[in-house]
Each structure stands twice: as structure tokens, then as C-alpha cells.
Image (cartoon, rainbow, N blue to C red; front, side, top):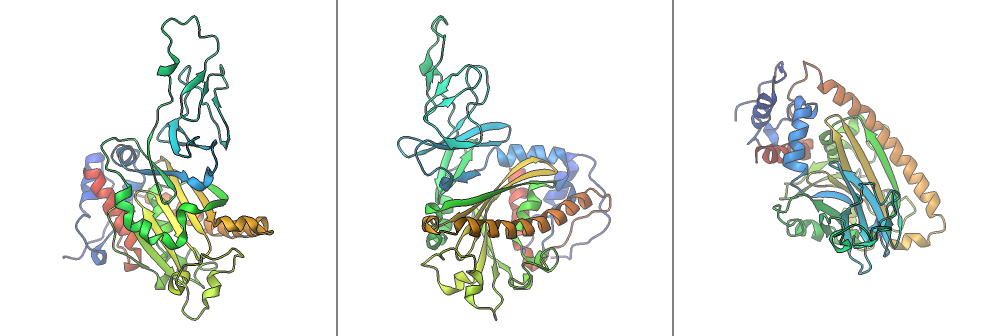
Length: 390
């Protein structure tokens, strides 16, 4: 393959030019790979196309079953302009529904909690955990009104290894079969059985792809995390896997001269069935397009993104632990300490990623060459290219 020429990148004048520039990077292997054009991170028109071709067609992660372990537990989640609620029903099943009242559109649920009835604050219409209307005051004179026809719309959903995924398309194939190999990988981490120790949410002034790429590569440890992660998990030791149909993975091993116990100093009970080589690794998993899962010897960092615009993303993280951790008398102290460390590392990423987004708007920004340490960046770019071209 001919070397990729680099030079001044004239911003595409319209979406067609940008799509041609995106497609030009197709068909390269890792050692000849390059980034998407910077305009793919800044263009509102390209973001609208991503909404249509990716977010409206693929499976999107909205949460983990550890957030709603009991009947009546619920949490709300808004994405793609849709107001949603996930709830544990009386039958123990997880359902995802619209939370917009079918009377005059006020949301029937906010935040998270436990309930027997979703009650609209406007006129007190009430819906059961299955979404069926059970209360509608003063509607007896409304001719032809049938409460049985008023059920909150259900959103197509699947639960895989504890993660709750939704899909707005009826034509997209089921996700579970395509994640069978991922589920096998997660067995030792008990992912589907974990509970939420604490959560974090960040408003990111950058494109969703930047958030995914940064999570999935450890090359940047030598820069952004020089004072935090680089010492124990040197970026130069990181490596990626070949991409599977619906997921990929990267790894950031512990420095060889450090004992395995270095990865188990949080105070949480370690997963009992992990071999030593897995305990020494911090795994980084991406279920396309933006479910990010970080595996550790004693916990899981579970992340989803909410793409808001071409240059704004909401980052939601739940730190998942084994149920036995609830018995620790100092769990709150452990969680507070881990949260402080996580905030420091997140701040390092947020700062440099915001700078990166700003730099991408420059006339002189151009397609960049990728290192072999950035295989997941290359894989995500190929995923976007394929979806946009579909």
C-alpha cells in the first residue's frame, strides 16, 4: 500500500465532500491506518447523519441491571430526544418505556427511585410498572375514551450480561448472539450479577467519538496521565485485539516488576475466579457504538455516552462491585477514595479532549496517522465508515 500523504487539509465545503473524505480511509490495515477527518468530529451535518445511521439503528446502552435490582426500581434516561424509563416489573423483568404521559405529554417519572405507579404530576394520570394506564381522573365523560388503549410505548430492549440495551429500529438484528463471545469473556467478572457502588456523570465539551477513542487507548498515558496511570500501566505496554462483529478490546497490563497485588489495593474483595494474568491487566472493552467497560481485579467501570451535539457529550459511569461488598463496614470510605481518584483521571482526560475538539476546528487540522497502540481508534473509525455508508 502506498504511504499516506499528509498535508494541508482543506475543510470540505459540504457534506458530500466530507463523506468522500471519510470513505477515503477505508480498506487500510492497522499499520497504514489514519483518523477520520477532523470535520467528522465538528460537523453538525455529519452528526445528524450519525444520529440517523448509527444511533437510530444500532443498540445503545442505557444502564445496568445493578441500578434496578428490586421490583419497582427505576431510572430515567434521555437520548435521541426520547424520554425513557427503565423499570423492574412485578415479574422481575426489565422493561424500557417512554415516560411521556399520553394525556398532555408531561414526563411521568424523573431521576431514579422505587414506585408502584408512575404518576403524571400534571393531572395525576397513573401508569403501572408495565406501562398500562390504571388511573385517569375525571375522564368518565370523554366519549369513546378507552384506558386499555393508553399504554406507554415500549422500546425494544435486550439485557446482555447485565447491560440494558435499546434499539429504535425493528430491523436491526438481535444483539445477544453477537455478544456471545463477549459474555464468555465476562464470566469471571460476574458482570450480570454486580451492583452499583457509586456513579459519576460528566458534561464533555467534545464529540462522542473522542470520548470512546480516549477510553479505548492507553497510548495517551505518556502524556495526559503521566502523573497518574503511566507509572503502573505504561502506555507502551498496551495492546489491542482484533475486532469482533459487535465489540472490541484493548489491554493495559501492569508494569512487569510490580506485584499483582498492586491492582487490588482498593479494599474491595477481588473476583475469585480470575487467573493471575487477568488480575494483572486492566481490560478496556467497547461494545459499538459507545458502551465502554473497564475490567479490574475487583470492580468494573461501566460507561455509556449520550451524544448531545457534534461538540458535546454526556458521560455516565457506574462503578460496579460484587454484592458481598455491601457487607464491608468501610464501603462508603472506599467508594469516596475511588471516586476521588476517578475524578482526577477524568479531569486529565476532559482537559486534553476539550483541547483536541478545539484543535479539530482549525483550518490546518488534518487527517492523522495512527500508532499501532491505537488499534481501537482505527476500529471505531472503520465502524463509523461502514455505518455511514450503509
